[in-house]
Length: 276
Image 1: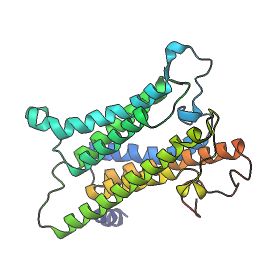
Image 2 (image 1 turned 90 degrees about the vertical axis):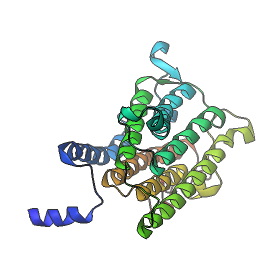
Image 3 (image 1 turned 120 degrees about the vertical axis):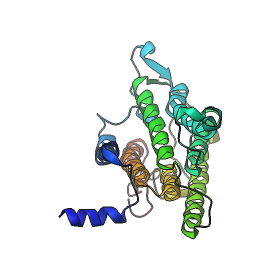
């Protein structure tokens, strides 16, 4: 049995060594195993965006939704920028070396911050705890990805390394652009008919699924994982799949309750066209 497990492990991408690495891997597996069920349960899903339950709460325990979303994304952006810039200014700080994956994290979370500030429309408030916890999680995830890539990606003559960089970068770019396009469609729904009510999204892959922006976000994270080729970064992707998969189910259920059959067909999928 131990020999079989060793053979399987030898074929997997490398993970963090020692007991600390095993602990990180175990935690990632736990998050992957629980996130889907957590997000599909109205009692336990993350309370932000349209699922916020801040109405009636003490205003001192809530934030305006736009500020709350910035709390979610800004820490990860700052971590990525520190990893890209600080090693040169603070070589004794022990930070991981700058990497393509860290740059991808900076681009992803920088884009999200810009969308929050200039693209999305927000109303209402969000409790302080939820965005704070998600912000810490994203920051730690960025740090994890950066340490996983420390000294692992080199622009050398290794053809396989170049292939991973090309494939991963292509997927990341497709994910980034597809995610932005569908966020743009969402942001302009209410402008078209001058209303503050929820409007059934149309256009792009919204004709097939409830959350195409989640699908493209996952494509982008797969690109980061391919560039990294490290087990713990692949586990970041599986945890994102679990989380966003559950979130997409909740979004589709919300749409079915909110819109009629004509505006939102009941057989429309959650996140992957024709499949799920």
